[in-house]
Image (cartoon, rainbow, N blue to C red; front, top):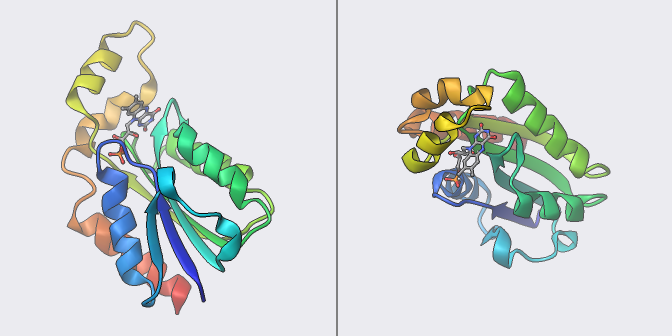
Length: 160
Ligand SMILES: Cc1cc2nc3c(=O)[nH]c(=O)nc-3n(C[C@H](O)[C@H](O)[C@H](O)COP(=O)(O)O)c2cc1C
């Protein structure tokens, strides 16, 4: 199985998950930032990691998700400031799957990712502050070692 891990990460949270995914895959897999990612058409299994921006996968990931259409088995993973058990987080993952429509969806994982404090301060000051910031304080310190273990367990089941 030829495997590729692609990630988009502005402040490093999603990259941490990407490295854990990469370490969980059989030897020979490739790891790449979305900026340098190869064509997914050459791979049997592609794991793509994104972060949430305005309730959606970040724009670079959206562009790559569209390239996955019709290719490979795809595993999606994400970090966000929203509570993982929120409609906000769930609908973003559903939207990501829809963008890769035609790929075989193998599974997903998402968790809190600490929000840049300056960004959080600015968003909180907006009169139309989005609902997801209510739980963003709980994202501090994430992804943590427990998140990484949960991710590895999810992948382990998938790859067994
Ligand atoms: C400009 C900006 C917009 C964001 N918008 C959202 C959002 O709509 N929903 C959310 O849950 N988190 C949002 N976040 C929080 C990030 O998704 C979260 O901190 C993520 O872990 C960042 O990942 P990274 O470190 O890999 O860049 C936003 C962060 C930034 C900087």
